Length: 366
Image (cartoon, rainbow, N blue to C red; front, side, top):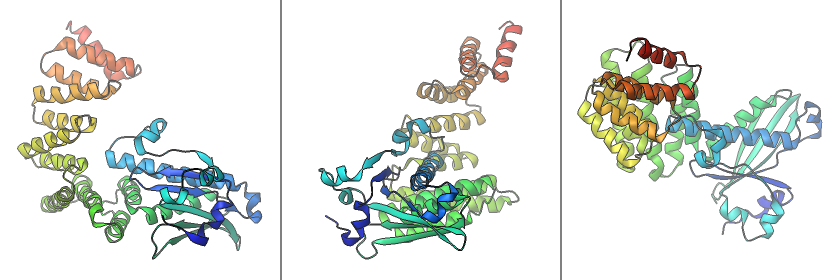
């Protein structure tokens, strides 16, 4: 059983600990962050700062999961979606009970906010089970009146020490939003992941890098056809590299299907979409992506199968019902289309597109 020795002494004086499990499987315990008396005038107490920090960590995990899966994570089901839970426990009950805190939680964090030359300084100590390097320090300085940016940067620093992959996914989302398709920050963190994480986890970084090259090929302006093909080729190499390490890694399989579809290699695209469904038949994004690829080929009957599955998986997805109605109209199934648009309108009563489609059916006598 690992023993932090004297480093654990401050923890046992704490009154609360926050426990968190990131979707990547990293378990974290966060002690209350102490705030110096000089900073009490800012309105940030120890409890407030601890809450803000844990919220930042949770939000980063949520965003990373959403970025990984390509869907929005429902905050109300956060525990189920990203394996994160938010509870405060009396530390004494844990220490005195059957559970050994430091035997089960690989990362323990404590810290403080102090004042230095009119600036607030947040310092976090990350205790790990690494006997050669058991403590990591993260320090962020900023304006005392505005603590949120300090805690945001602090949370990024903490997670980069614990699992750079989470931070890489966050940076990728930010860089997509700002159209930085060379992904400088994401690349830097991905390289750090490859250097610091066990080899058997490298498939995550390969998949991430492959996705970056795919996005650059799709979204970057001014690329020549040759440059776009080169980006796709690099993406394919990295995605296959990820699958060599982990053949059932769903997202590289989907990305390969999308690339082959964009290149007009429809047989290869179908093969990979089918493989993705074999890995997880209940993942809606695969069904919709394959359905859209089939629509572009005007293979409407095949596309119906995928969108029927998508609607079955998520009956409250109005957009999927709209797409299914479109397909039914292409095949001449007017009543089936009417049924889907009616249900879509029930879900989104103010949607003018669904209203217009139903009105068009009525006025045409169909």
